[in-house]
Each structure stands twice: as structure tokens, then as C-alpha cells.
Length: 353
Ligand code: MRU
Image 1 (cartoon, rainbow, N blue to C red):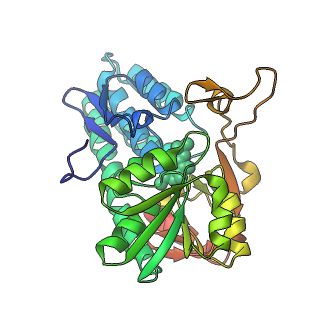
Image 2: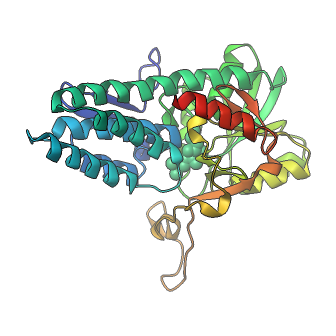
């Protein structure tokens, strides 16, 4: 069990070792384990197998990964150093294609490294920029929570999908950040967490996080959501996002189904995400949706569930058209697309200056 008086941080950086420590998310809820890695290659493996996962947490891990690469490089030649760090950044970028935050975190640190002439100053800048990425994400999640809690009725039943909690961020969470902030402010919240096939991030992670905080949570299978909505058991839906283009929200596979069902039952459907999740100049067709291995679906609890000769299709994410989204809850307030595209662009431009 993790100590309850410290904020849940899934990934932390220890430059003095140097190492990255992370909660092994594939082991939850059976085991709360923190592992330590000392190389970029090990970080790549941890991201690919989803020991570290969730869009903002991937951004933080990517930022720490580039900083780790600066510290583990053994060359004394600044040019070779820059080549090695860029190669490490490329390797980290190749791990998962859909969550844009991964690229954001990597690029933030790589940009400052490239500005430096000496290895020592590049290392110093990399470490502090990586910590900035993590700390900003924590502050951002709390701001998302504050904006989001205001749209919730004083007592409500919320459906969420996958895990958009502290485990998926630096701390607090996006969708679960809204829920946490609401509970903190006295709102009576009952959460329905969809189990989230095939890797059960909702059942394993969302349920674990909320139970740790003493928040009322009930797990349902993904296919039960429509029926609960029809029975009047859901007041609103809040999910996270891996990438938000000008026309669609990419999130864990199954999110689109919930959005359609919410629309059919006139239930508000909110997305909670930081500005680092926006990719507003792209459109749905531009985005690569990660396809994961057959075995994630062909086996359940260690047992084969599909005949060996039968094909499996396993996209990790889907796209929900923005027309089905009631509002996107961000650290700068709540926006709708396409109406607020110009404002989103303007805020993004300002934050890059
Ligand atoms: O494959 P995962 O577990 O990385 O997918 C995570 C999700 O889809 C989350 O909902 C999303 O990253 C938002 S996290 C705040």
C-alpha cells in the first residue's frame, strides 16, 4: 500500500543516482510495487508494457527519460553528447504513437538541451526542465479539478472510462482530478468505473485509486454503461484524453461508445485534459492509433479465450467526434470545439512564448 498522506505520484526522478522510479501499474491492484530504472532502454520497456501509462504521465516519463539520457551519457564530446541525447529522444518517441503528451514532454527537455554548449549546463537544464514538466502537470491537474467540479451537481453519479487519475498524470488526475476536487469541496459523488477491456485500467487502477481515497466507486463492465444510462443511473460522464485534434477526442477504446450512449440519453459528456493534450492543428485522419498485441485479447487471466486460428483486432484508442463532447475541461477553463478553436490556439501560442 502506498502511504496515504503523500500525493500519489506514479513517476519520480532521482538525478543523484541517476534513476527513474515508478509505480508498476501492471501489478495493481494485487501488488503496490515501486521499481527503479537507470537506463532509457528500461524506460522504453516500461512504457511499452504499460507499467507506466496514461497521457500526462507519459509526458512526464518522456521528459525524465531525456534528462536521464543526459546523465547517463559517458562521452566528453559535446557533439556526440547531443547526438546520443537526440537518439534517446527518438527511441522514447517510438514507444507509443497516440498520446501527444509523450512528444510534448520529450520535446520540452530536448529543446533546452539543444540550447546548451556544454555537457554540464545541458544536464542542469535538462533536469530542471523535466521537473518543470512534472510540477506543471500537477498544478494543471488541480486547476482542471477546480474548473471541472463546478459543472457537477451537488450530488451526482459519474461514469468514467479507463484511468485518468493520479496514476495517469503527475498527481491528482484529470477526470479523477475533477472527481477528487468535487469530493474535497463537499459534492456527493458516486462513481461508476467501466472496467475498460482489454487491460482493465478502469477496474484495476481507477477503482484502486478511488478506493484508496475513500471515494464511492462501483466497477461495471464496459457493455453495461448504456443500460445504466437508460435506467437513469448516470448524471454525467467524465473521461480523459490522449490527444485532442480540431475535430475529435482520442481516448481509450470504448470512449466513443460511451459518448454515443450519453448523447442518446441526453447526458452531459465531458473530457478533462491539460492543454498539452491538444493537437488542434491536426484532424482525426492524421492520427496514428496504436494497435496492440493479439495476446492482450486472446488470453484472459492466463487462459486462452480465442481459437489460435482466429484473427484479433486490438486498437488501443478510438476517436469521439467533438460534436458529442459537452465540454473540454482544461486548466484554463472549459472549452467546446469547434467554437473555441481560435481561443485554444491563442492560449497555446501564448504558452509557447
Ligand atoms: O493505454 P493507456 O492506459 O495509456 O490509456 C490511457 C487512457 O486512455 C487515458 O484515458 C488517457 O491517457 C487520459 S489520462 C489522464
